[in-house]
Amino acid sequence: MTGIPVPILTREAAWSLFTEFTTTPVLIRHGIAVEAAMRGQAAIHGGDVEYWGIVGLLHDFDFERYPTAEQHPFEGARILRERRYPETLVEDILSHARYSGVDRIRPVQKSLFAVDELSGFVTACALVKPSKSLSEVDPAGVRKKMKDKGFARAVSRDDIIDGAAELGVDLDAHVLVVVESLKPIAAELGLVP
Picture (tube, helix red, strand yellow):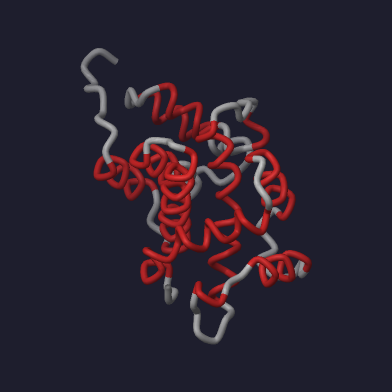
């Protein structure tokens, strides 16, 4: 390990790592959505916007190659450690999986868990609107879609509810923050702001 340089945590370096392992459009969109939502959370909670964005972008970087619960996010943690990324980043990323054994203690960890599933769900809610606009996504509509078990069935409703609770925020207010956080990257998500 001595010959491996310590990586500098920049968005550019994170993007390079992310796209080295992630090539499918749906996973790329998910990564950038969670990145944007994490930047929004950092602004609210007084976190480092760049660092929180990187955590969001990289949280699932290993998922395309290692999609099982036995592999993800553990293979990603192994890769990050091999490449000498800071252990704090590794732990923050591991914390988003309920089964990782890493407790969510710090605000960045709680925020990652809280926005992970919700970012995808909000995007899905906007995609089914005729206008494909985030402006038409509101908390009442999100709650209604959450009751429809056939809609975005891979999204854990429990994680959405528990994520807001862990953050200590009202779910409706949390939905609004995520919607607003996604608006600047709406076009990249195939949406209208």
